[in-house]
Structures are given as structure tokens and as C-alpha cells.
Image (spheres, helix red, strand yellow):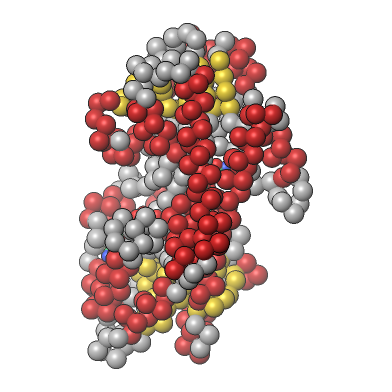
Amino acid sequence: MNFQKKILCIGAGYVGGPTMTVIADHCPQYKVTIVDINEEKIAAWQTDELPIYEPGLLDVVKRTRGKNLFFSTDIVKEIDEADIIFVSVNTPTKTFGEGKGKASDLQYLEKTAHAIVAASNSAKIIVEKSTLPVRTAEALEKILNSNEKGIHFEVVSNPEFLAEGTAIRDLENPDRVLVGSRETEEGFKARQTVVDIYKNWVPDERIIRSNVWSSELSKLVANAFLAQRISSINSISALCEKTGADVTEISRAIGADSRIGNKFLNASIGFGGSCFKKDILNLVYISETLGLTEVAEYWENVIKMNEYQEKRFVKRMLVTMFNTLANKKIVLFGFAFKADTGDTRETPAYYVAKMLLEEHANVFITDPKALKNAKIDLAEFGDKVNYIEDPYEAAKEADAIAIMTEWNLYKTLDYKKIYDSMRKPAHLFDGRNILNLSQIEEIGFDSHAIGIQ
Ligand code: UDX
Ligand code: ADP
């Protein structure tokens, strides 16, 4: 089949995989290929055991795979053949040197840029899909356009706003698509080419065009604002626990104000995920390096509040359970950073588990999709942590249950059966406010939720 254009995505992860699959689904006229250095991942994308769990993803993959969606590890060949290259490699927080713990580690991005230069024999549009510090496009352009082949690469920023667990829905029906470019003739042309991809299914009024720096920074700011809302309501949850106000009632009351809006007001054990902390740290680092100390401090507090929330949760468990957790069996219901994903990056459950282990508790973990990742994350603790898929089995003889992830499954369990199998007094700490506490108390549990006295 003759395809109109060849689109390549470098990086087959949580962002690249779903995004490109949906593009392929809506654009049969384009050939879409996803490459990765990780051979295992690429092999898995070609089976029905995809390397990531995302509701609805497999259906779209099955519809497109082998028709106009392809997976490969032949990065050199695919770069050479591509007209448009989406770069979707990981950009974790630096763990060494200057900016350690805050700045983005751009080594994978830079390697990718050099790989593109080495393998290319014609002009291409390079699309930044990974979340990047503002002005990264400048560095990328420098590396790409300092090639000796005389090839021009135009860099466009198109940050991805999908949330895990709802990736397919978010991609099918996005609030907005953002495409930023240089405001030159070449830049506008490249911007239009990227816009034309999305126009296949996204209404034009939802496609926002901007300059490249605004696009890069908007992604960081969107995540910072979302995280800030969670830290704000979590700070209020601490106040509620001391005053008798109920944080869920406060969320409802303030969320009804259309200026505030009702989303992202669920008080919780804290936010996790690969983006929020990383992106805020990045914002903090950029602000610091530009001498904007007050701006940096302002945003850093969003992370501090999140850490406080995790610590506060464990402290409450400790105090409730008579100031000792040593040798008590505590079961974490959920380890994923949110429901409907197996992803455990920056999951609050990890920090809670670590603090419980420091208190010498016997930690058991159950989760429908994240046990494999949990085992990797907590490998250093060896057999001090137990992993059981069945929540009923996990809860047997436990002293306490702590709900870490808002899986639907945990809303519908038979808590009477669980209570009967536990040691008494049986404690339940709802870190996601998903259970009806009066019903839980009626069963006999000593129960506690976030932001409720
Ligand atoms: C986020 C952004 O939503 C998305 O736009 C961006 O592209 C990537 O980062 P994600 O991390 O996948 O997406 O999940 P999100 O739904 O934003 O949740 C992040 C964390 O906040 C989770 O741990 C979630 O449980 C927590 N959360 C969310 C709350 O504690 N309370 C809320 O009200 C909402
Ligand atoms: P995200 O959540 O941003 O998608 P992931 O870590 O899930 O991040 O995915 C990033 C992917 O990029 C990984 O599968 C990784 O193997 C891949 N990757 C990193 N560096 C390169 C590279 N130089 N060439 C190809 N793929 C790469």
C-alpha cells in the first residue's frame, strides 16, 4: 500500500504507544511505526500481552497492527524512511551532577537527536512529544541542524496531555491538542503538517497553535496546576481531621463554584505518577536557574505538601494502632499510583510501604495489575514484603488494611467477609475515600479516611 506520509515514533512507552496507536487508527493514509531500543517491549507490542495496561488499548492495537501500525527495533532504517518523527523517549529527573534531583535528564533525548542526524538523508519534522524543559527545542535544533549533510530539521512541540488509565478516551476526545512551532515560514509549515494529522479526528477549535516555547512550558504548567489542586485539597484535609469538617463535603461545596470547577478535588494519600513530581521539580529548577527564587519556592511547596500527606497518613496509622506497628500485618490494597493502570512510578503506596517497613510492620501488597512492578520497586526489601493477588487471601489475619489505589474492585469487596478473617481490633485506613465509612464501621472495623475526623 502507498501511504501518504510515514510517521515514526521513537519510544514505545506509556505516551508513545497509545498516542501513535490512536493516530494510526484515525489516519489510515499514514504509515505509523513505533521503534524502541528495548527489544522486549517491541516484541510485547506485537502480541496481545501489551507491555502496558491501558483500558481499550488492545482493541485499537488489534484494529491497526499490521495494517498501518508497525513496531520495530530497526531504528536506523525507520528514521531514514520517516517524514515526521515524534520523539517520545523518557526524560526522568536527573540523579547525578548539576541539577540532581530536579532538572530533567536529557541524555536519552540527546542520543535520539544524534541517532536522527546519523540515519537521516532527507529533511524531516521532529516533534517533541516527551515533556521537556522550556527551550529544549533550541538545543534539539542545534544538534539536529549542525549536521554536515545540509539537511534541515524543523522542531515542533506537541506535548501529550493524556492521563494513564483513560489514555484512549483522552486521545480520542482531547480537551485540546497543542502544537507549537517557530514563527517562521518553515515553522508554520511544519506546525500545519502536525495539525493536519490531528484534524483527522479532532475539531479545529480544539487545536491550539502557539509558539514553541509556550507549548513546551504549557505542559509543565498544566501538570503543576493539577498537582497544586491536589496539594491544596490535601492541605485542607489535615485541617478537616482536626476540626470535624469533612473534606469530601468541602470538595463538593467549592467544586460547585464554576470558577473553581469540581475536578481534581479528591483528597487522597497524595499524587503519584511519572509526571507531576518530575514536572514541578523541573519548573522549580528552571525558575531557580533564572534567579526566580520566590517562584521556585512557591511550586516546591506543592511537592512538600504531597510528602507531608504521605507521612501524615502513616503517622495516623501508627497513632491509631497504639503507637506500634512492629510485627503487625498491614495489607496495602493497591500499589498502582491510580486506578486502571499497572504503573507504579512515584506511587504514594511505595513511600507508605517504606515507612511501614521502617516501623517493622509485616507488609502485604495486593493489586490487580501492579504486582509485577511492585516487586521490582520493593526488591531491596526481599521477602520482608509479601505479594498476594487475591485481596481476600491477603487480608486474612491482618491487623489493618490501607487502601492505596481507588480500584473499582476495592469498592465492591465483601468487607464483612474480610473483617471476619482479620485480627481484632481490625483497622481500615481509606487513603482514597472510596468506602462508605458508616457501613464499614457498622461491620465492626475501626475505620479512618482522609480529611474526616
Ligand atoms: C497526569 C495529567 O493528568 C496528564 O494530563 C499528563 O499528561 C500526565 O500527568 P497521570 O499522572 O496519568 O496524568 O494521572 P492523573 O489522573 O493526573 O493523576 C495523578 C495523581 O493524582 C494520581 O496519583 C491520582 O490518584 C492523584 N489524584 C488525582 C488525586 O489524588 N486526587 C484527584 O482529585 C485527582
Ligand atoms: P513515557 O511515560 O514518557 O512514555 P516510558 O519510560 O514509558 O516514558 O517510555 C519511554 C521509552 O523510550 C522507553 O520504552 C525507552 O526504552 C525508550 N527509549 C529511551 N531512549 C531511547 C532511544 N535512544 N531510542 C529509542 N527508544 C528509546
